[in-house]
Length: 444
Image 1: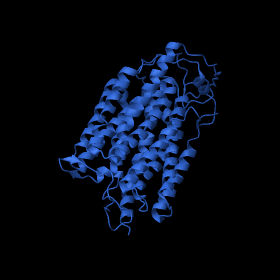
Image 2: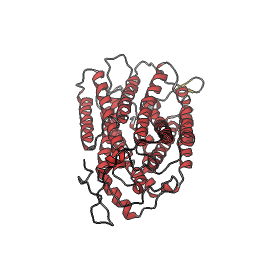
Image 3: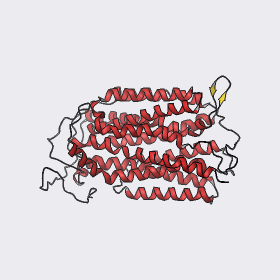
Image 4: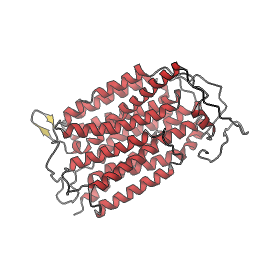
């Protein structure tokens, strides 16, 4: 199968000839490499889990943060099973005065800034300080939101979670360039696991009666696990074995940009290759066929998640408004986890199809918010689960395709650049969801 441009040739600015590569037969890995493989696989899975955990928890807690209340003893409290109380009696949507998209923006805009600046110079900062900073910010976010006295203070804690997640994602995706490409699948599965476990743990702990404050404080072990996974579990990067199934597949795909690099170069973290501006621009242009679909996928799904979830309110159910919102988040994350873990089962090259399907989901649910034609919340549950499956599949297949279609010396830059796609789509959705929320909540 071909790459973005539909050709099987290696394109190079410096060489005009066609270079052919014969796929190599897979070779069995020696026992010591097998042990290192599983350590790295588990390490990247845990890094994905821990990196996205605080981000997901803040989105799951968005409804509680915006309906912030104080109980006696100066303790954050949201009744886990409250009697539904409309915030806006003039609206059929039972709206908060501020859309949950406000929490989304606080949770994503710092990440967007980090990812936009990362390809310009983040590689000058060694990986270890970046990981340490990410872990500290994640812990700070849980503590600040848990002990906050106001929505503004809570949003500052959400910003810390965003810094942690954004810095961690661009760091760890760049780090995959120095390990076998299989770790991308493990990283993606871990980030999906963060969504499921983060949303499920918040839903479960608040459902059994734990206050949001104690729920957040119980999660402080996650940042510690992130640091332990990086500093103690990952093995030192080694030159990648040129044989194997993944190399055979890569030989059949056209790189986004390629040059004849020395055989088995010893790429090391904290010593990023120096690419010229022309090389970076060429790689960036080649990435557009993956960046644009991923932007559309994440724009549509987060417009649904933070713009419409709160408005998809069913009064003919035993679930309160807050409980409905938490269930939406949990089911979405379950779909994301399943599809981000599916790379070994099936692979999708043409991610444009996923973007179109996700945009259809957005239009369908937006029409339902306006006309209220779906009779049961369980139908929405199924759609939300399907939405998560599409989003997770788009993420893992995008980065897998990029890993196959970039040469070793360009992969670190390509990964750091492409990871801005989801964040850009999420940011745009948050900006549009705010005025939509205000408009719909003013309807009688």
